[in-house]
Image (tube, rainbow, N blue to C red; front, top):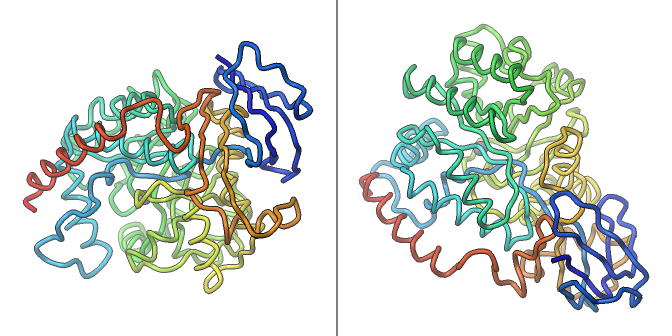
Length: 423
Ligand SMILES: [Zn+2]
């Protein structure tokens, strides 16, 4: 059944034009919405949501996420504290992802999709690893996201870190998934992907006209390793391999880039994803968009699913390390929609919307909206979420899945996962 949002203050996400309207929202993927003069629409045949005093705008999307880390929250610390980025990966994430199985992947994905939906995101771009449960992992995630009603662009994080057999399984899972659904060719990072695996990944990219999704210069180690092994810097290595040629390619982090690398990336149509909180947590450096062009979007890097929070982190930390203002913070936050539409990915259409219950002591206008975006708006203001024209969150409650039951089971699965990890 179509939805009718009555008496809304609609904000066009790209122009920030404000319009008082009744909004007809068809329940068909990527359908257009119709704006009518407020008070004019007939309620017959639609589910009506009274939006008087509410702001309605396009819902959000996550540019880079990791479903695999969802059950790590509150996990006991590793026996030995990591001292650097490589040890953070080895002691925490590479121990966790090796312990994932079908059930823990499913509950990681359900928890992630639920958190994303409640924080206003109706689309997630994910980068997944589960070296002891590779075949079918992406289907488990896709099915869980579909169940919650959140769109997705998934990939399996191919790597040589667990040997050639696992790398080949990762490539097979990628090709198997791309045969039937939209997705990307995932690679962990240059320092864990050797020449043969990189070459095979590029072949899959060209076979399926897909982009790559890879961590780039997150830590200095990625550059040091590349110089030592291949006598070149990471951007040059990826460029020679053909990774940067696709406008679908997503490079994640990009902290340790020199002037020549920035210049080269600026000329390409591929995209960079900034994940400021993750960079702070891992003490790897701070992102700067300087001389990188405008193809920058934001992600959460698996830390949480709240894109408004990611935008605030980008803005505030950016006051030290970056050139960023209200407008560019908002632009980066919204660029994920441009990435998805330019590349004809489905599931991020006009009929993905949020209804905001935004109480402000000052007026909200087209002129000052980005100030409210940085200093005022938070996930607490998200009242209803509409995905593909379907109401999936109503009055802050998920309608598509039983959230308390899923969380209870997720917590049980998390304890099992931690035990498997020896925690
Ligand atoms: Zn990441």
